[in-house]
Image 1 (cartoon, rainbow, N blue to C red):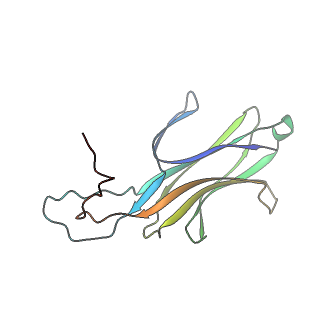
Image 2 (cartoon, rainbow, N blue to C red; image 1 turned 90 degrees about the horizontal axis):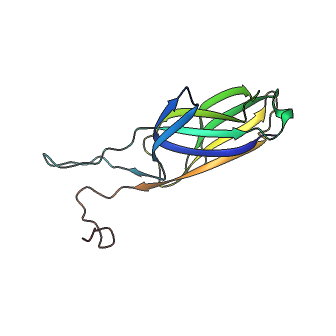
Image 3 (tube, rainbow, N blue to C red; image 1 turned 135 degrees about the vertical axis):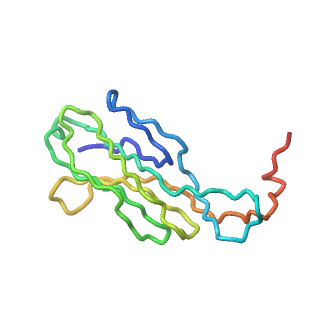
Length: 158
């Protein structure tokens, strides 16, 4: 049976088709939900991240897995438990030791504070039950107002 290798979520990825490697920038550990507000002319306003990519990777654990067809889903599990499938793939390991599934998705607007889980789940084709799951948590927070001043803990000292 395959084993979970790793899962993460980042704002940017770049694939190298020659080496099969993937580079990632800006791993998402927290998301801040910004509330629409009136802003003054020339006021700096933060730009929220609108799109991200899930990278879920599975490892072949024995030769019996080589010819077995597997199904994988990459899923957003919103605070509150609602699920959204954002990626789906079928694959056979063959000679490969790892299989990676990349799923780009738009970050849902209006997320409630809590934990957004990114989940990659695997089952044999034709089975109903998922055999394995791996999860990556992202903390969803309400962003401070652009007009509020940072607390003493947030201020940089030089």
